[in-house]
Image 1: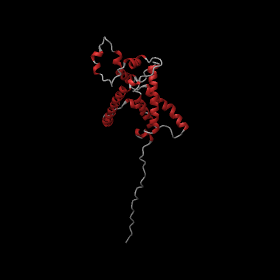
Image 2: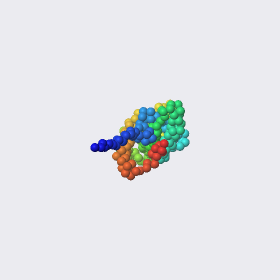
Image 3: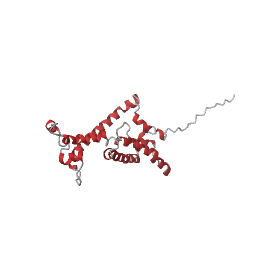
Image 4: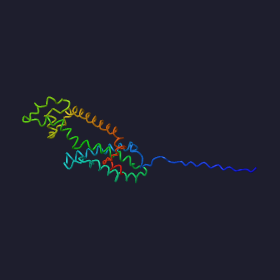
Length: 225
């Protein structure tokens, strides 16, 4: 009787595969860090001051009137070409990630639309314009003033409206008491519009991105970083 040798095939060696995404392929939500949000808010405030000063003080340029406004593009350039290289040199490993830069850009991009010509200027004109431009010739007072709620417009022409359009007399302080209530209700209205718009984007995101594969040209600039 001969002995037969049975060879059992060796089980394949299991190799551990690292499925963790590389930093370049992390979702944008990974950039929602404290420093990214804080830096985005600071740059949004600086952008607001710059926009108002450029448009209404120096009368240089309306830097928010564009599909990709300069007011949002310049802070992005500062972060990418100046701030981040400094962080890489001074604090290796602590530089801003691609996702953080995207978060900063979209915070500034969203904020840049508020103080510009197409938003705040029209909003403040709607609040105060009727009582400043009313005259006997146009007859606005008899035509529609009775339909303007006192809490929705600035109706004190002598103290508030005239000062807004022509400037405050020397030594006089801003009469905020006439502006607080209308600004509160209009701000609530604009916040509601923003929430509705953001909600619609969330609802339509899957259809737009996964099915229709829209390119979103304005989003390509930070995504190319």
